[in-house]
Amino acid sequence: MKIFIISSNEKELSGIAALLHERHAGDDIDSAIGSLERLSGTAEMAAPDVLLLAQAEISEADLARIERLASRLPGMAIIVQCQQQGADFLRLAMRAGVREVLPSHHPGAALDAALQRMVDKSAQQRQSKGQVIALASCKGGSGATFIAANLAYALAQENQRVALFDLNLQFGDAALFVSDQKPAATLSHVAQQIHRLDISFLAASMLQVTPNFSILAAPEDPAHASDVKPEHIDQLLHLARQHYDFIVLDLGRGLDAISVRALDQADIICPVMQATLPYIRDGKRLLQAFAALEYPDSKIRLILNRYTGSDEIRGRDLEDAYGQRIFHTMPNHYAAAAASVNQGVPVLKLAPGSPLSKSLKACARTLSGTRANSAPGLLTRLFQRKQSIQLRGETA
Image (cartoon, rainbow, N blue to C red; front, side):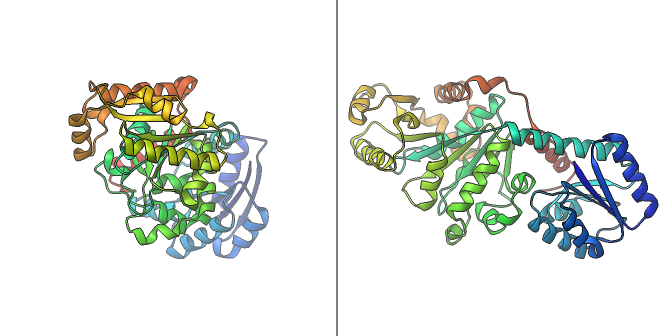
């Protein structure tokens, strides 16, 4: 890696450079004595992979300079080594675009670990390509959001790294189905600062449900739906594919520029329907729209929800009507589903013996396939680190 060090303390600067040379002789280490204010131009010219700023105190002005630098050089990781280690400072530093905050005393092991995390991230970006699954409602009340949120949770239980993006921009509430926490940020906040987008910023903007399952919530105010542009969806999904095994999209109902861009990017599209005539009619219209968008049939996986087995319209009738086989059937278990929604607890956690929970788990296993044995990667470790910080009193 190309690493640029800035410090006003010449002795400290020499010590850090020596540590880095000892760590990996192949790294390109450059350094300069001074402050970030004086040398930010030099750092930009160097265009390093990592910028390490070592000084006793980081001021608000320094954080503002870091944020401007991070926005201009989004591929550069910024590490700060300072005496400030409080939760409030850590939060402000993360928001400014700092990747790691290290202690001033005995930085060797911490610096080595931070750089190794960045090496792991780089390797994972080259190798990983997560699968995007979009759930679309054939008609209002289909249960698509319930399935999206709980299927994402079920995939995470299969040792997968999972993100759920709530793309129902005006009335999305997917987070409420699996958590009673209030999201610290939403998709509109990310869109407003899209120039800062990297995995650290994305992770800090998401609601963490489990160490390997997080949700990017929809805007709280419907007026902020316009903050999100189609090109933002491209950027989000490109980044998410590099760090997650599965990205589940809750699209809601209807087709617009945002949902079509998401559908274009999806590997699998799951229309959610029920066994009634109105759903058959609207489902056929939705499939016709997908055909007009030139999505291949192999990309479409029909999900039949709330099926009792005694419904007048059978699954076979639906397959004849749609001209496609049903990929998965979710049984009707109202008591478990209602309790799950009302409590904001995933149905697999609240009622693991429910036929609905078992069906969601089976669907997750079918989708995960050979990914089920994948080892936890960078994002899982990042979330675990974030969780440990929260236990010390930080709210991210």
